[in-house]
Image 1 (tube, rainbow, N blue to C red):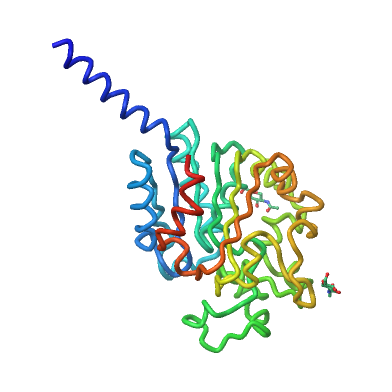
Image 2 (image 1 turned 120 degrees about the horizontal axis):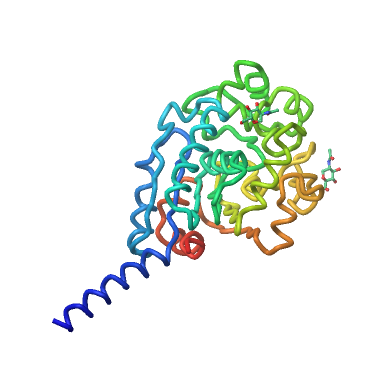
Amino acid sequence: MKFRTNYFLILAFYFLQINAAYKPVVILHGILSGAESMVILVREIEERHPGTKVYNCDKFSGWSSLESAWRQVEEVRDYIDTIGKIHPEGIIVLGYSQGGLLARAAIQSLPNHNVKTFISLSSPQAGQFGTSFLHLIFPDLVAKTAYELFYSKVGQHTSVGNYWNDPHKYDMYLEYSVFLPIINNEIKNSNSTDFKSALIRLDQMILIGGPNDGVITPWESSHFAYYNGSLDVIPLSQREIYTTDAIGLKTLKENDKLKIIVKPFVHHLTWHTNRHVIREVILPYLN
Ligand SMILES: *[C@@H]1O[C@H](CO)[C@@H](O)[C@H](O)[C@H]1NC(C)=O
Ligand SMILES: *[C@@H]1O[C@H](CO)[C@@H](O)[C@H](O)[C@H]1NC(C)=O
């Protein structure tokens, strides 16, 4: 009888340990896909980190992933908020591609969030200036003239228009884009202070990207680096968003909370499906 009691206690302790070891993970899918596209990643986390509670967000799948960024951010914000309240010990948020940009904006819109780690998996954090992934929707679109579509009232009804950042049309970007210059505090607004302090609340921000991505253009946008007017990529450390600490990236870096991962030989569509990549660049940060 005594043995059984002990055995039960050990088992109970074991499960509690497992649950205590790994924080819950919220996952956000990319554009023109849905939660099902993230299943390999979910399984890999559950197998390698048993006991992890994974929330695979199924909002804005397929075509609805093209809805305006703010509309999506508001729902994602509420989703993260709800899950955060279920797990007061803290949660991890991972967003892939467009999902990583929307997730970051959602976190920035939650002044009291309890997100401990945010992982951006090849997301256009500083914008996008390439159309390869858009040819399904806009077959004739070329980057050079896409601003005519995106920098308009109509174009701003799509998520892509909201983070389209044409380095030759920076003034138009500031004038028309209702999303990226706001969330990146390039245009100061009444929420700027909150956007910054919410990011500084993170324990870790992990930015993952690589030179063979093939979709995020420039690929360095995944690390908040971006083109200047002559298409030279300006590293994060020299960009205004960093030097002025506009959204807290400098503060995070100086406190050793910002990690930039450059991983070559990974195509955009395989970051979340290649088990080696998942094991190497994602799992180590899910604690
Ligand atoms: C600030 O955030 C609130 C709540 O999300 C929003 O209603 C308001 O429009 C935002 N203000 C600006 C200037 O973006
Ligand atoms: C872009 O950056 C490069 C390298 O720093 C510089 O030589 C070039 O003049 C810059 N172009 C513009 C338009 O600012």
